[in-house]
Image (cartoon, rainbow, N blue to C red; front, top):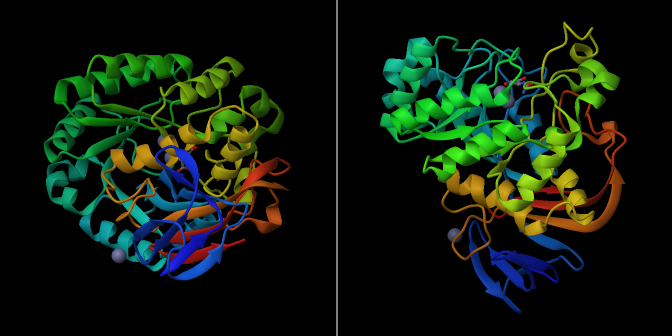
Length: 395
Ligand code: NCD
Ligand code: ZN
Ligand code: ZN
Ligand code: ZN
Protein backbone atom coordinates (compact mmCIF):
# COMPACT_ATOMS: atom_id res chain seq x y z
CA UNK A 1 0.00 0.00 0.00
CA UNK A 2 1.28 3.48 -0.95
CA UNK A 3 0.59 6.48 1.27
CA UNK A 4 0.76 9.98 -0.15
CA UNK A 5 1.91 12.06 2.81
CA UNK A 6 2.37 15.76 3.50
CA UNK A 7 0.30 17.11 0.65
CA UNK A 8 -3.10 18.68 0.22
CA UNK A 9 -5.73 16.34 -1.18
CA UNK A 10 -8.61 17.50 -3.37
CA UNK A 11 -11.68 16.11 -1.58
CA UNK A 12 -15.28 17.10 -2.36
CA UNK A 13 -14.26 20.30 -4.11
CA UNK A 14 -11.70 21.47 -1.55
CA UNK A 15 -8.03 21.03 -0.69
CA UNK A 16 -7.56 19.27 2.63
CA UNK A 17 -4.29 18.53 4.46
CA UNK A 18 -4.57 14.77 4.79
CA UNK A 19 -3.18 11.49 3.47
CA UNK A 20 -4.49 8.88 1.09
CA UNK A 21 -3.51 5.21 1.05
CA UNK A 22 -4.07 2.97 -1.95
CA UNK A 23 -3.33 -0.27 -3.72
CA UNK A 24 -5.18 -0.39 -7.01
CA UNK A 25 -8.01 1.41 -5.30
CA UNK A 26 -8.14 4.18 -2.74
CA UNK A 27 -8.30 2.32 0.57
CA UNK A 28 -8.27 5.04 3.19
CA UNK A 29 -8.14 8.78 3.68
CA UNK A 30 -6.94 10.31 6.95
CA UNK A 31 -3.93 10.92 9.18
CA UNK A 32 -0.96 8.62 9.92
CA UNK A 33 -2.03 5.88 7.54
CA UNK A 34 -0.09 2.60 7.27
CA UNK A 35 1.90 1.83 4.16
CA UNK A 36 4.90 2.96 2.16
CA UNK A 37 5.03 6.76 2.46
CA UNK A 38 5.65 8.94 -0.59
CA UNK A 39 6.59 12.49 0.27
CA UNK A 40 4.15 15.02 -1.18
CA UNK A 41 5.09 18.03 0.99
CA UNK A 42 4.12 21.25 -0.68
CA UNK A 43 2.22 19.38 -3.39
CA UNK A 44 -1.43 18.99 -4.27
CA UNK A 45 -3.07 15.62 -4.96
CA UNK A 46 -5.83 15.58 -7.57
CA UNK A 47 -7.96 12.89 -9.20
CA UNK A 48 -6.35 11.98 -12.54
CA UNK A 49 -7.55 13.96 -15.51
CA UNK A 50 -9.93 12.27 -17.95
CA UNK A 51 -9.31 13.43 -21.49
CA UNK A 52 -12.47 12.56 -23.40
CA UNK A 53 -11.10 13.43 -26.85
CA UNK A 54 -7.71 12.20 -28.10
CA UNK A 55 -6.48 10.90 -31.45
CA UNK A 56 -3.73 8.37 -30.73
CA UNK A 57 -3.42 7.37 -34.42
CA UNK A 58 -1.37 4.15 -34.50
CA UNK A 59 -2.06 1.62 -37.30
CA UNK A 60 -0.90 3.16 -40.60
CA UNK A 61 -0.28 6.51 -38.87
CA UNK A 62 1.92 5.31 -36.03
CA UNK A 63 4.57 7.74 -37.29
CA UNK A 64 2.37 10.56 -35.94
CA UNK A 65 1.57 8.87 -32.60
CA UNK A 66 0.92 5.41 -31.23
CA UNK A 67 -0.58 4.16 -27.99
CA UNK A 68 2.82 3.97 -26.34
CA UNK A 69 3.90 7.56 -27.08
CA UNK A 70 0.38 8.90 -26.68
CA UNK A 71 0.01 7.31 -23.25
CA UNK A 72 3.38 8.63 -22.13
CA UNK A 73 2.35 12.13 -23.22
CA UNK A 74 -0.96 11.79 -21.39
CA UNK A 75 0.65 10.59 -18.14
CA UNK A 76 3.16 13.44 -18.30
CA UNK A 77 0.19 15.77 -18.50
CA UNK A 78 -1.56 14.25 -15.48
CA UNK A 79 -4.10 12.46 -17.66
CA UNK A 80 -4.95 8.95 -16.39
CA UNK A 81 -7.84 8.09 -18.72
CA UNK A 82 -8.11 8.83 -22.43
CA UNK A 83 -11.10 8.27 -24.67
CA UNK A 84 -9.74 7.50 -28.12
CA UNK A 85 -11.33 8.73 -31.32
CA UNK A 86 -12.06 6.29 -34.15
CA UNK A 87 -10.77 8.23 -37.19
CA UNK A 88 -7.68 6.07 -37.44
CA UNK A 89 -6.52 4.43 -40.67
CA UNK A 90 -8.21 1.98 -40.92
CA UNK A 91 -11.06 3.41 -38.84
CA UNK A 92 -12.53 1.84 -35.67
CA UNK A 93 -15.83 0.78 -37.22
CA UNK A 94 -15.76 -3.02 -36.91
CA UNK A 95 -15.51 -5.44 -34.01
CA UNK A 96 -12.07 -6.53 -35.29
CA UNK A 97 -10.76 -2.97 -35.24
CA UNK A 98 -12.28 -2.28 -31.82
CA UNK A 99 -10.45 -5.34 -30.49
CA UNK A 100 -7.24 -4.28 -32.20
CA UNK A 101 -7.55 -0.80 -30.66
CA UNK A 102 -8.17 -2.39 -27.24
CA UNK A 103 -5.12 -4.64 -27.55
CA UNK A 104 -2.85 -1.68 -28.22
CA UNK A 105 -4.45 0.47 -25.54
CA UNK A 106 -4.06 -2.26 -22.91
CA UNK A 107 -0.33 -2.50 -23.54
CA UNK A 108 0.04 1.20 -22.82
CA UNK A 109 -1.13 0.80 -19.16
CA UNK A 110 -3.23 3.97 -19.16
CA UNK A 111 -6.97 3.77 -18.49
CA UNK A 112 -8.85 4.16 -21.73
CA UNK A 113 -12.17 4.12 -23.48
CA UNK A 114 -12.88 3.41 -27.12
CA UNK A 115 -15.17 5.40 -29.38
CA UNK A 116 -16.84 3.29 -32.03
CA UNK A 117 -16.89 5.15 -35.34
CA UNK A 118 -20.11 5.32 -37.32
CA UNK A 119 -20.17 4.66 -41.05
CA UNK A 120 -23.06 3.87 -43.41
CA UNK A 121 -21.79 0.25 -43.53
CA UNK A 122 -21.97 -0.45 -39.80
CA UNK A 123 -25.26 1.27 -38.92
CA UNK A 124 -27.13 -2.01 -38.72
CA UNK A 125 -24.51 -3.45 -36.37
CA UNK A 126 -24.23 -0.65 -33.78
CA UNK A 127 -26.20 -2.63 -31.22
CA UNK A 128 -23.66 -5.48 -31.43
CA UNK A 129 -20.71 -3.07 -31.25
CA UNK A 130 -22.23 -1.22 -28.29
CA UNK A 131 -21.06 -3.85 -25.78
CA UNK A 132 -17.45 -3.24 -26.83
CA UNK A 133 -17.20 0.55 -26.82
CA UNK A 134 -17.47 3.38 -24.31
CA UNK A 135 -19.48 5.58 -26.68
CA UNK A 136 -20.05 6.23 -30.37
CA UNK A 137 -18.68 9.01 -32.54
CA UNK A 138 -20.35 10.53 -35.59
CA UNK A 139 -18.58 12.94 -37.91
CA UNK A 140 -21.34 15.13 -39.34
CA UNK A 141 -18.68 17.50 -40.73
CA UNK A 142 -15.51 17.05 -42.74
CA UNK A 143 -12.63 15.58 -40.69
CA UNK A 144 -9.20 13.96 -40.82
CA UNK A 145 -9.70 10.41 -42.16
CA UNK A 146 -12.58 8.75 -43.94
CA UNK A 147 -15.40 8.91 -41.38
CA UNK A 148 -17.33 11.96 -42.61
CA UNK A 149 -21.01 11.00 -42.94
CA UNK A 150 -22.47 13.79 -45.08
CA UNK A 151 -26.00 12.56 -45.79
CA UNK A 152 -28.62 13.89 -43.41
CA UNK A 153 -30.74 10.73 -43.67
CA UNK A 154 -27.80 8.57 -42.61
CA UNK A 155 -26.93 10.96 -39.78
CA UNK A 156 -30.52 10.84 -38.56
CA UNK A 157 -30.54 7.04 -38.64
CA UNK A 158 -27.26 6.97 -36.72
CA UNK A 159 -28.83 9.06 -33.95
CA UNK A 160 -31.77 6.67 -33.83
CA UNK A 161 -29.61 3.55 -33.69
CA UNK A 162 -27.28 4.93 -31.01
CA UNK A 163 -30.29 6.04 -28.97
CA UNK A 164 -31.43 2.40 -28.98
CA UNK A 165 -28.09 1.28 -27.53
CA UNK A 166 -28.27 3.76 -24.63
CA UNK A 167 -24.68 4.88 -25.30
CA UNK A 168 -23.57 8.49 -25.51
CA UNK A 169 -23.23 9.80 -29.07
CA UNK A 170 -20.33 12.23 -29.47
CA UNK A 171 -20.58 14.34 -32.59
CA UNK A 172 -18.27 16.46 -34.65
CA UNK A 173 -21.10 18.63 -35.95
CA UNK A 174 -19.25 21.67 -37.32
CA UNK A 175 -19.02 22.03 -41.10
CA UNK A 176 -15.70 23.42 -42.26
CA UNK A 177 -17.15 25.98 -44.64
CA UNK A 178 -19.96 27.01 -42.31
CA UNK A 179 -20.06 30.60 -41.08
CA UNK A 180 -22.05 29.57 -38.00
CA UNK A 181 -21.26 26.80 -35.57
CA UNK A 182 -24.73 27.24 -34.04
CA UNK A 183 -26.46 26.35 -37.34
CA UNK A 184 -24.48 23.08 -37.47
CA UNK A 185 -25.07 22.23 -33.83
CA UNK A 186 -28.74 22.94 -34.31
CA UNK A 187 -29.08 19.94 -36.62
CA UNK A 188 -27.50 17.64 -34.03
CA UNK A 189 -29.67 19.06 -31.25
CA UNK A 190 -32.79 18.61 -33.36
CA UNK A 191 -31.96 14.95 -34.10
CA UNK A 192 -31.30 14.43 -30.39
CA UNK A 193 -34.73 15.84 -29.53
CA UNK A 194 -36.32 13.54 -32.11
CA UNK A 195 -34.48 10.37 -31.07
CA UNK A 196 -33.75 10.88 -27.36
CA UNK A 197 -30.06 10.08 -27.84
CA UNK A 198 -27.61 11.10 -25.11
CA UNK A 199 -25.67 13.72 -27.03
CA UNK A 200 -22.14 15.01 -26.54
CA UNK A 201 -21.04 18.01 -28.61
CA UNK A 202 -17.32 17.90 -29.36
CA UNK A 203 -15.11 21.01 -29.58
CA UNK A 204 -17.70 23.77 -29.23
CA UNK A 205 -15.91 27.09 -29.55
CA UNK A 206 -18.31 29.98 -30.15
CA UNK A 207 -20.59 31.96 -27.88
CA UNK A 208 -23.64 31.24 -30.03
CA UNK A 209 -22.83 27.52 -30.08
CA UNK A 210 -22.58 27.32 -26.29
CA UNK A 211 -25.74 29.38 -25.81
CA UNK A 212 -27.73 27.25 -28.21
CA UNK A 213 -26.67 24.00 -26.51
CA UNK A 214 -27.31 25.53 -23.11
CA UNK A 215 -30.86 26.45 -24.18
CA UNK A 216 -31.48 22.89 -25.33
CA UNK A 217 -30.17 21.62 -21.99
CA UNK A 218 -32.52 23.94 -20.11
CA UNK A 219 -35.36 22.53 -22.17
CA UNK A 220 -34.50 19.11 -20.79
CA UNK A 221 -32.27 17.65 -23.51
CA UNK A 222 -29.55 15.25 -22.32
CA UNK A 223 -26.61 17.08 -23.90
CA UNK A 224 -23.06 17.82 -22.76
CA UNK A 225 -20.80 20.52 -24.15
CA UNK A 226 -17.06 20.15 -24.68
CA UNK A 227 -14.41 22.74 -25.41
CA UNK A 228 -10.64 22.49 -25.81
CA UNK A 229 -7.64 24.46 -24.55
CA UNK A 230 -6.68 25.81 -28.00
CA UNK A 231 -9.96 27.74 -28.16
CA UNK A 232 -9.14 29.19 -24.73
CA UNK A 233 -5.61 30.29 -25.57
CA UNK A 234 -5.66 31.18 -29.28
CA UNK A 235 -7.84 33.16 -31.68
CA UNK A 236 -8.00 33.75 -35.43
CA UNK A 237 -5.45 36.55 -34.91
CA UNK A 238 -2.90 33.95 -33.80
CA UNK A 239 -3.88 31.83 -36.79
CA UNK A 240 -3.09 34.71 -39.16
CA UNK A 241 0.34 35.04 -37.60
CA UNK A 242 1.25 31.37 -37.25
CA UNK A 243 -0.56 29.84 -40.20
CA UNK A 244 -0.76 26.07 -40.61
CA UNK A 245 0.75 25.46 -37.15
CA UNK A 246 -2.59 26.59 -35.71
CA UNK A 247 -4.74 25.03 -38.41
CA UNK A 248 -7.35 23.04 -36.52
CA UNK A 249 -10.86 21.76 -37.13
CA UNK A 250 -13.13 23.46 -36.22
CA UNK A 251 -11.05 26.61 -36.79
CA UNK A 252 -10.03 29.18 -34.19
CA UNK A 253 -12.46 32.07 -33.79
CA UNK A 254 -12.72 35.60 -32.42
CA UNK A 255 -11.43 37.07 -29.18
CA UNK A 256 -15.04 37.61 -27.96
CA UNK A 257 -15.67 33.87 -28.24
CA UNK A 258 -12.47 33.08 -26.41
CA UNK A 259 -13.45 35.35 -23.53
CA UNK A 260 -16.94 33.89 -23.45
CA UNK A 261 -15.56 30.34 -23.18
CA UNK A 262 -13.62 31.26 -20.05
CA UNK A 263 -16.77 32.77 -18.57
CA UNK A 264 -18.78 29.67 -19.53
CA UNK A 265 -16.20 27.38 -17.92
CA UNK A 266 -16.28 29.23 -14.66
CA UNK A 267 -20.08 29.57 -14.61
CA UNK A 268 -20.68 25.85 -15.16
CA UNK A 269 -22.03 26.23 -18.69
CA UNK A 270 -19.28 24.03 -20.04
CA UNK A 271 -19.44 20.35 -19.10
CA UNK A 272 -16.19 18.94 -20.35
CA UNK A 273 -12.71 20.13 -21.18
CA UNK A 274 -10.82 17.81 -23.56
CA UNK A 275 -7.62 18.26 -25.50
CA UNK A 276 -8.68 17.04 -28.96
CA UNK A 277 -5.05 15.87 -29.07
CA UNK A 278 -4.61 15.58 -32.85
CA UNK A 279 -0.93 15.02 -33.62
CA UNK A 280 0.56 15.59 -37.06
CA UNK A 281 4.32 15.72 -37.66
CA UNK A 282 6.34 18.91 -37.98
CA UNK A 283 6.97 18.04 -41.59
CA UNK A 284 3.23 17.78 -42.27
CA UNK A 285 2.43 20.99 -40.41
CA UNK A 286 5.16 22.99 -42.15
CA UNK A 287 3.54 22.52 -45.55
CA UNK A 288 1.70 25.44 -47.21
CA UNK A 289 -1.54 26.27 -45.38
CA UNK A 290 -3.89 24.60 -47.85
CA UNK A 291 -1.95 21.33 -47.81
CA UNK A 292 -1.25 21.06 -44.08
CA UNK A 293 -3.54 18.77 -42.04
CA UNK A 294 -5.97 20.01 -39.38
CA UNK A 295 -5.09 19.31 -35.77
CA UNK A 296 -2.93 20.26 -32.78
CA UNK A 297 -1.29 18.03 -30.15
CA UNK A 298 -2.39 18.85 -26.59
CA UNK A 299 -2.78 15.90 -24.23
CA UNK A 300 0.41 16.68 -22.30
CA UNK A 301 -0.03 20.45 -22.04
CA UNK A 302 -3.72 20.79 -21.14
CA UNK A 303 -3.37 20.41 -17.37
CA UNK A 304 -0.32 22.72 -17.02
CA UNK A 305 -2.07 25.35 -19.18
CA UNK A 306 -5.20 25.16 -17.06
CA UNK A 307 -3.30 25.14 -13.74
CA UNK A 308 -1.53 28.27 -14.90
CA UNK A 309 -4.94 29.80 -15.67
CA UNK A 310 -6.11 28.85 -12.16
CA UNK A 311 -3.00 30.52 -10.73
CA UNK A 312 -3.83 33.67 -12.73
CA UNK A 313 -7.42 33.65 -11.45
CA UNK A 314 -9.14 32.82 -14.77
CA UNK A 315 -11.04 29.97 -13.13
CA UNK A 316 -11.12 28.01 -9.88
CA UNK A 317 -9.32 24.74 -9.24
CA UNK A 318 -12.67 23.18 -8.31
CA UNK A 319 -14.20 24.05 -11.71
CA UNK A 320 -11.11 22.74 -13.47
CA UNK A 321 -11.38 19.35 -11.74
CA UNK A 322 -15.09 19.31 -12.47
CA UNK A 323 -14.67 19.74 -16.25
CA UNK A 324 -11.45 17.76 -16.68
CA UNK A 325 -12.14 14.82 -14.37
CA UNK A 326 -15.44 14.53 -12.52
CA UNK A 327 -17.89 15.37 -15.33
CA UNK A 328 -16.16 13.33 -18.04
CA UNK A 329 -16.18 10.35 -15.65
CA UNK A 330 -19.91 10.79 -15.03
CA UNK A 331 -20.81 11.39 -18.64
CA UNK A 332 -19.00 8.31 -19.95
CA UNK A 333 -20.01 6.10 -17.01
CA UNK A 334 -16.50 5.64 -15.59
CA UNK A 335 -18.08 5.09 -12.23
CA UNK A 336 -14.96 4.60 -10.08
CA UNK A 337 -13.09 7.62 -11.41
CA UNK A 338 -13.16 11.40 -11.49
CA UNK A 339 -12.84 11.91 -7.74
CA UNK A 340 -10.78 10.90 -4.73
CA UNK A 341 -12.94 8.68 -2.59
CA UNK A 342 -12.54 5.35 -0.81
CA UNK A 343 -13.17 2.53 -3.29
CA UNK A 344 -12.34 4.60 -6.36
CA UNK A 345 -9.56 3.61 -8.75
CA UNK A 346 -6.23 4.96 -7.51
CA UNK A 347 -5.84 7.23 -10.53
CA UNK A 348 -4.23 10.30 -9.05
CA UNK A 349 -1.91 13.08 -10.10
CA UNK A 350 0.41 14.95 -7.75
CA UNK A 351 1.00 18.51 -8.90
CA UNK A 352 3.38 21.25 -7.90
CA UNK A 353 1.26 24.39 -8.14
CA UNK A 354 4.32 26.61 -7.72
CA UNK A 355 6.62 25.05 -10.26
CA UNK A 356 7.22 27.48 -13.14
CA UNK A 357 8.59 26.13 -16.39
CA UNK A 358 8.37 26.57 -20.13
CA UNK A 359 6.82 24.14 -22.61
CA UNK A 360 9.94 22.78 -24.23
CA UNK A 361 10.01 20.87 -27.49
CA UNK A 362 12.88 18.60 -26.47
CA UNK A 363 10.94 17.36 -23.44
CA UNK A 364 7.69 16.50 -25.20
CA UNK A 365 6.62 12.86 -25.13
CA UNK A 366 4.32 13.04 -28.15
CA UNK A 367 5.80 11.52 -31.28
CA UNK A 368 4.75 14.46 -33.43
CA UNK A 369 7.60 16.44 -31.91
CA UNK A 370 6.09 19.90 -31.46
CA UNK A 371 3.54 21.84 -29.45
CA UNK A 372 1.56 24.97 -30.29
CA UNK A 373 2.42 26.14 -26.75
CA UNK A 374 6.22 26.13 -27.11
CA UNK A 375 7.46 29.39 -25.53
CA UNK A 376 4.53 29.44 -23.04
CA UNK A 377 5.84 29.77 -19.47
CA UNK A 378 3.44 28.02 -17.11
CA UNK A 379 3.03 27.75 -13.34
CA UNK A 380 1.68 24.39 -12.12
CA UNK A 381 3.00 21.03 -13.35
CA UNK A 382 2.34 17.36 -12.63
CA UNK A 383 5.19 15.71 -10.75
CA UNK A 384 3.78 12.16 -10.31
CA UNK A 385 0.99 10.29 -12.05
CA UNK A 386 -0.52 7.04 -10.74
CA UNK A 387 -2.86 4.74 -12.64
CA UNK A 388 -4.49 1.86 -10.69
CA UNK A 389 -2.06 2.78 -7.90
CA UNK A 390 1.00 2.30 -10.10
CA UNK A 391 3.44 5.17 -10.44
CA UNK A 392 3.69 5.56 -14.20
CA UNK A 393 5.22 9.04 -14.44
CA UNK A 394 7.67 10.95 -12.26
CA UNK A 395 9.01 14.34 -13.22
C1 NCD B 1 -8.66 15.88 -35.85
C2 NCD B 1 -7.63 14.87 -36.37
O1 NCD B 1 -6.59 15.31 -36.85
O2 NCD B 1 -7.86 13.68 -36.26
N1 NCD B 1 -8.27 17.18 -36.27
C3 NCD B 1 -8.63 18.36 -35.73
O3 NCD B 1 -8.27 19.39 -36.30
N2 NCD B 1 -9.34 18.44 -34.62
C4 NCD B 1 -10.02 15.49 -36.34
C5 NCD B 1 -11.19 16.08 -35.59
O4 NCD B 1 -11.22 16.17 -34.35
O5 NCD B 1 -12.19 16.43 -36.24
ZN1 ZN C 1 -8.43 -2.59 -4.17
ZN1 ZN D 1 -13.69 16.79 -34.62
ZN1 ZN E 1 -10.79 15.40 -32.64
